[in-house]
Length: 226
Image (cartoon, rainbow, N blue to C red; front, side, top):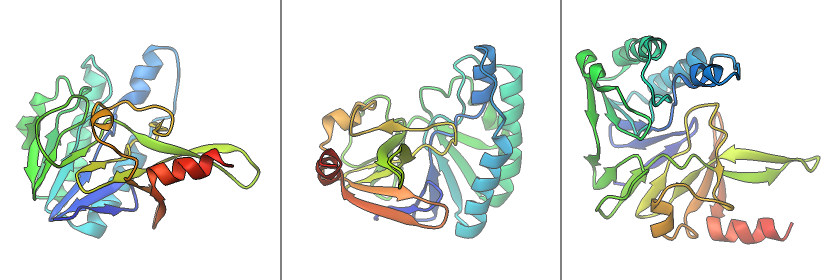
């Protein structure tokens, strides 16, 4: 089955909706370091609920990094519980494929959330992407893929993107705080070091549309010439 990228930084695969890298609690972690950011929890939940109400999937799969902090704390626990309480009425099940940030999340099983390290779905293996595993076709997060473009006044802007190929799909980060990693300059996930992504199509999700920038290798050549 072919995954379908959607506006709003989500992927449809059969009756499942897949997102990655919500990094809930990011603001709390930054405040601990002296950086104070406005909370975006309600914005994130509102965007996800709108997606679920529109697409009506049976399953929501979070492909890693539901949360941000490596140190579990009570404020984060409250936010995760509020997230599950808001989302669970809209789907039959919630599955978390654990990412490197998802320490201390097993208690969510008490709220009927399934927690796994990898998930097989319609011929694809879903893993977070922070470490390599055996398989043939993967859907991953972790990379927070983005590209840099110039706007009409010549300023550089970074926009999140899907990377789509026949054997590797890389999801954009769902978090509005995850500005993204420019995959034309640097890569984070070991999957992108093993798989040749120059032929991957670059799709930039907007609120109601997807912009197709063509193969990543071709886009790199075009941007280099500007």
